[in-house]
Structure formats: structure tokens, C-alpha cells
Length: 258
Image 1: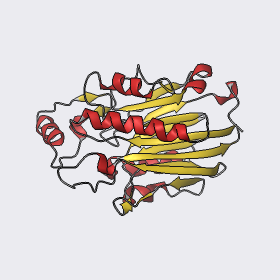
Image 2: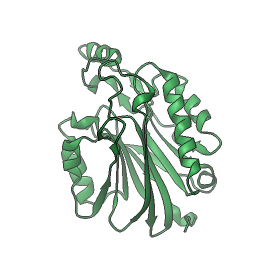
Image 3: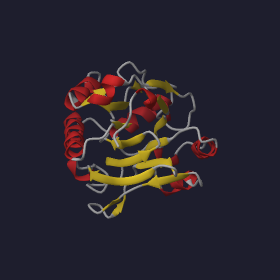
């Protein structure tokens, strides 16, 4: 089974639409695990072979920007959403930020039941709020019926040791599978919005200097990780300030939950 994880950057890069439309038309992936999906990005995901799952965030009275796209042959049995909007006050939008949260879906596939979760943790310099969001993610998912689970998304882990601390917060229930993956964020392509990290990135980009960060990660539940070794590929397509991550999991080696 093939997955694609991508922060779509709200469609900021011009090549995103063609990329998404092509991979859906070619049926390249079974599930797309996406972040920063605005209405214009959603228009690129209209394909007769796929369904899109989003959530309305009552906390901010707006659509959340997480999205799970899955083959129509899969059956959505259950889904859930957890807002992170109010865990940190955004200096520009206050608490009304539609990006951050957790969206998960239980899908019945040909191989059996599995859970897919898309996460987007807060950006900026506040590492503590991101760790709290990871802990909340673990708590929410562990409350549900146990399923073979893949968690993927943008953890905004900007500090050097932060990915290790995120992995420790998830452990032992979920295992960090992208530990050896190269950086996926290139700040030269980040949008110039009124946040300090973005302002710095925009300034450095004038000199063609980019900060490369390991912000995008994949975790599997402990039992699944014991039996399966997934493979990962960072795609070269420049369709966001984040690089797309392709994940291949051979479920033939293990029957999924029924």
C-alpha cells in the first residue's frame, strides 16, 4: 500500500495543482495524508476514484485544513478530529487558526482495517506546545479501538533535538519510522507572512540561503512496526516548501485488523 504525506502550503506553489491531479489520475497512491488544504487545494483533489475527508472546526467556526484522501474502494467506518487551535495564541490570528489539529480515519481496505491520521503541529518557536499536541494525539488515538495505525504530517520540529523529543513523547505506543529521513522543509520556498520565522526565511532567501529542517515525519503503532519495515522516498517535486514523502508498506506480510 502506498501513501503520500504532504503539507500543501495552501497552494502557494504554482505546480501543486498539476501534481495532485496527476497522482490521482494515475492512481499512484492508496491514501494521501495532507495538511494546509484550503478550498483552492481541495479543487485539485476532485477525482472520481477518490474520496476526501475534512472536518469542520466548531472551535473556530471554520473548515480545518487537514485532509485525508483515500480510494473509493475503501470504506470509511469511523473518523475523528481534534483541534489544536487554542493551544497557543497566534500573534496574527489570535486563536482562530485553521491549520493545526489532528484528523484520523478508520478505513476498511482489501487487506483489512487500518487507521490513518494526519497531524499538523504549531509552527514557531514554542516547542512545548508541539510536544503537548503530540501527547494529545497519542491520548486521542489510544482511546479508540486499537487499529493498525499510520500517523503522518507536519510536526514543525524546528529545533535540532526536537524530532527525538517528539518520538519520545509518542513512545512506546507509536514508533518513529522516518528517523533516518533527510530534511523535508526548505525555507527558501516558505511564504513571507508576518511571523518571525517566515520573515527570517524570506530575508535569507534573497541571498538564496535556505534552512533545511526535518519537520515531516511518519509513525506506526508499536505492533505494526514490529512486523513491517516501511520504505520512504522524498520526492523531488517542488510543489510546496515541504517535499512530498512517499511511504510504501507491504501489508501482505501482516493481516490488518478485521
